[in-house]
Image 1 (cartoon, rainbow, N blue to C red):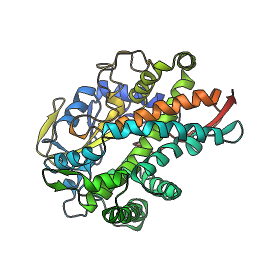
Image 2: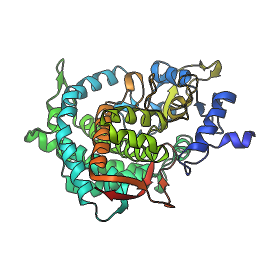
Image 3: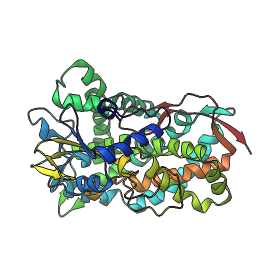
Image 4: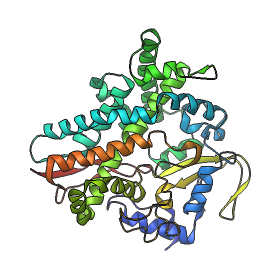
Amino acid sequence: MTQDALATPPSLVDGGHRLFDWLRTMRDEQPVREDAYGVVHVYRYADVLTVASDHTVFSSELGRLRPESSPLSEEILSVIDPPMHRKLRSLVSQAFTPRTVAGLEPRVVELAGQMLRDVPGDEFDLVRDFAFQLPVVVIAELLGVPVEDQSLFRSWSERMLSVQVDDAVERQFGDESGDEYQQMVRTPLREMHAYLQQHVEDRRKRRGEDLISRLVDAEVDGDRLTDRQITEFGGLLLMAGHISTSLLLSNTVLCIEENPRIGSEVRADRSRIPQVIEEVLRYRPPIMVMARVTTRETEIGGVPVPANRMVMASVVSANHDERQFPDPERFDPRRRLQQQIAFGHGIHYCLGGPLARMEGRVALEAVLDAFADLRITPDAQIEYHPDGLFGARRMPVTVRRH
């Protein structure tokens, strides 16, 4: 493969299969690669795990690259390091518990069933009419914000997600003050935070039974969350929570479409659904990369990397590394999964992972209950998200009802 071919990963237009081939070549030939911007890309599982595990060398505080600029966020779990990260995670975990997630399941079952019953006709867009709607409603109800405002959530999400990874990297090293960047990222982020701030202020006056109220009351060793910390976590949950689940649902349908035998087996034995969901997360992880910044000169896979260098560790490549997962391009829910990292690793392991897994399982059960058959509409054009996200923005499907 030529250097030009190695420089640019293929699109997801074929569901990612050409990308899987490209990533295999990268793991073999350039497992640690510096691009034209000086960004270091990491492809092998062991190296990605190292980047994810050692926050003292690989920092999540991306603002280190532009200390003179105003970061998008200073107190959000995904982009801070200890000791602040440890404090915030402890406080948030006190309110967002496994029991909280488990308690949501009956409502998720009800919502998923109702949404699929309300779908008109035998053809619809799986993402628009179901995969996007379900997690948005679940998270809105969890936070205690009006579900009727989901059009706002969609607007903020689509505007921010329209920024591709390459665009984001370029902004790190270029001018981020332009009108386009403001419109695409900063403006919707500020709108979302202002919206959530109103709800936080309301809960400080009148507690409810929702997550925002529990975040207001959370206390560890006398420490409490500030308004900004609560709005940051609420925004993270609205954005990352709904997009991860939405992508998981559409990827599950795509994986079953490509492996009809698996679909038949799952219909015959629902107990296999958790295995299917886990293999979908390995095969097509919703978030494709994790970004870090080196705090000092180091090595990755024997390759020297200077301090203050952005590192992009490929989650999808790690989850397809044949050194960790035998025959990785085969979709096999029966495989023994050894630490697939769709939801990260180490201190930044995603708090919302259990919620996404539960919603994915319930959603697949609801599809099986509602339809005798669900297929991607023949000759339909699946529209995929830009770089960085693995999954469909639009997925036309045709169903046969029971």
